[in-house]
Amino acid sequence: MADVFIPGSLEEAVDFLADHPTTAMPIAGGTDLLVDARTGRSRPERLVDLSGLRGIEGFELDGELLRVGALTRIRSIELDAELGRRATALVEAARVLGSVQIRTMATVGGNLCHGTPSAEMPPSLLVHDAVAEITGKGGQYSVPLAAFFVAPGRTVLAPGDLLTSVRARVPSSAAGSCYLRQTVRWSMDLAGVGVAASVHVEGGAVSNARVALCAVAPVPMVVTGAENAVMGTSLAPDALAEAGRRAAEACSPISDARGTAEYRRQVVSVLVPRALRIAWLRATGSWPEGSPAPVNGVWTRE
Ligand SMILES: Cc1cc2nc3c(=O)[nH]c(=O)nc-3n(C[C@H](O)[C@H](O)[C@H](O)COP(=O)(O)OP(=O)(O)OC[C@H]3O[C@@H](n4cnc5c(N)ncnc54)[C@H](O)[C@@H]3O)c2cc1C
Image (cartoon, rainbow, N blue to C red; front, side, top):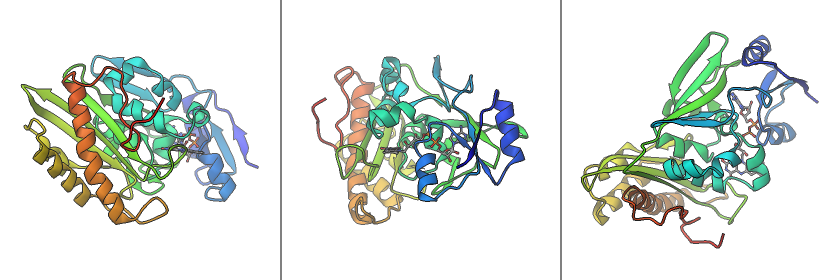
């Protein structure tokens, strides 16, 4: 059994972690960490309970800037109507994560800091050019989210560092995004492939595009080649197919219980064009307001 330290402030949490760099770990919702402790993947002697810390929970939209506190529960993202319009991919990713019980406990920060290659939050934040804001013993610093993930289970965080929030750019008009994933089971399964896409449309053509993947490389990845394939186009089928082909080529999936590497590449080549197309339809107002993307590429009853 680990001792639990309940800090009164962010500074106290950082100090405690810095004083016990090899034995203490932060805990937020505990949905990853408690499983890790039970399976022996992590053996913290001291847990620093972040859940009572004020100022790093919840999210706010200020113009085009979205700031999501690390302690924000996945469930509160899933249920927010304004985010559903402005950061649709993020809400769609939240919607398929685990179960209601898991989403009620799980935090955005925990999802990012655990560094799971299939984690649901990174792709839909990466397509909004997200930046991680971190506080450590030496003060505060920022890292582009694309550079935050180092290897499976590893991020740039040094012992004692805490992720405090993520800021992202969320355009207010002529933009749309989408998150699609493939799983073996319909629910309570990790992504075999996860794809987020966002597009900004000006004058009938894509003026900005982002494509990001999870579960098909050691870390979540942005696929610049796929983005370039659709820039300046009106997403004709050949441009979409090229984006899918480039994404499939760029990723490096493994073969495991969720599918072979070859199968995953094929799924990437299908889901990337589909996610881009849905993002386009949303950006141009042609997608039914509030209508979610299909799960596993198939429409389900809600
Ligand atoms: C049954 C089940 C189903 C799941 N399904 C999915 C799924 O479909 N998709 C998916 O992506 N995930 C899934 N998960 C994983 C998990 O729920 C998420 O990764 C969750 O968001 C983790 O958040 P947490 O607050 O519970 O993290 P915790 O378990 O509290 O922490 C996770 C890690 O991050 C560190 N940490 C937490 N917060 C911070 C911080 N602010 N700064 C620095 N380090 C921090 C902790 O020390 C720990 O190493 C599932 C888990 C379970 C048990």
